[in-house]
Each structure stands twice: as C-alpha cells, then as structure tokens.
Amino acid sequence: MENGAVYNETTEPEAKAPCCTLKHLRGWRLPVKAVQTILSFVAVVCEEIVEDCSNCGGLYFFEFISCSAFLLNLLILCVYCTNMYTTLGEDKVQKL
Image (cartoon, rainbow, N blue to C red; front, side, top):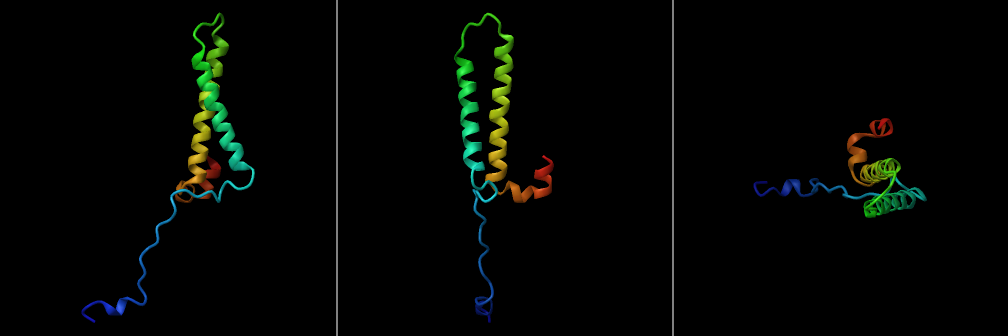
C-alpha cells in the first residue's frame, strides 16, 4: 500500500480534449464558411491593390464590408471548430 498499488486499477490519466473539432459544422456548412472566409480575404486584398479612384466612397464601404465579413467568418470558424463552443455553452453561442 505504500507504493500506491491500490490506486492503479481505478485511477486513469485525464484525457485531453481535442483542440480542433469539426462536429459543430457538419455537412455543407464547413466548406461554405471556408469559401466565405477565403473570398472575403481575397476581396480585402483586391481592394488594397487599388491605388487611385475617382469616387472612393463606394470603395471604402466595400473595404469595410469585406473586412468585417472576413473577421466575422474567422470568429465563427474559431468558435465552432475549437473547444470554445463547449466552453461558452450552446445557449451563449446561439445568442452571439
């Protein structure tokens, strides 16, 4: 009993949860979110290429929308594909 043999049968090391899980974005949703993220990033890059414009109001609006879409898609992918979904709780994620 002094060497701890009593605890060998019942004590197991705690298993670590996987860092990246795709169980919350199944089927067609994961590819669609990935494509949305890539396309919004391409839109941000294409907007930055423009050096001269005659009416820049629309270009600045496009930049704001594409950058916002990129950041929100990254947030969605991070929440649904990591342990953050279970950490926050399903009800809080749905409210978010």
